Length: 295
Image (cartoon, rainbow, N blue to C red; front, side, top):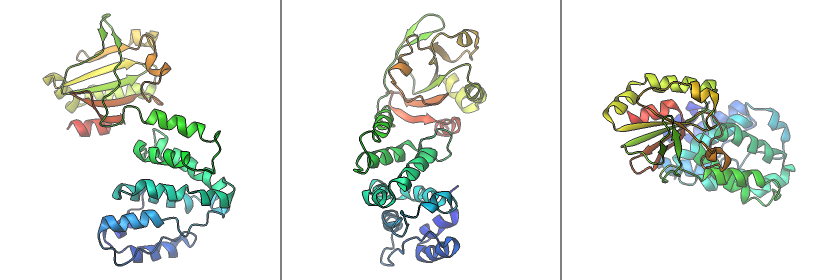
């Protein structure tokens, strides 16, 4: 959970006093003192993010077992990054070569694990693919990691770069329940619901979509088309499943979506919201994010 007092200090331009308060509270973690000459919030956020880890002892691996210090500091660090255009440079300071050399890579791997936990895991409330991309780039540029250690971040970066917000979504063919082949849908918005009918969470999200006044109003007006795709192909569960009459319901006959990893489908269900030109508005979004955007 983000430390809201911390951000109040930042936005109120009283970060120096906040830094001292944080230092007194934890002792083991010290925030940098932001120069009083920096008065614009964006300048203060940039300085803080770039110097955030200046006083952290990367050699003290005992801090790995102190989540109230190290993990909380990492979470607060992530919370600063949206307020600055220097996010990549700030993340680079965390994964800098000097840090891993001083610790024998133990602390480096700890922060890699925290990045996965908070930014990559789909169920994390702080899940943020754009920030995770910056982490992956920092890891690939880190000479302390071997070529073997870089296999996973290189793979994850390749997947993450597909179908990003603003990109035209990769086209694919769906076999619909009545046998039609579908590769294009015309509407102001297209909501793609990648799912597996055997998935419990898929059934939960399906019910939310079915009961949503926002979704239903747009479906009735024709401004929204909802495409449900069973990524496992023509399974018995899909054949037995029932879907609302206004949905376009089908399956990936060749399982190309998963076999060729056309989309990043690390968890089911996965929701993509597209515009009329099939550009991605929301990628791997929650139901709440989709409903808010459509509102």
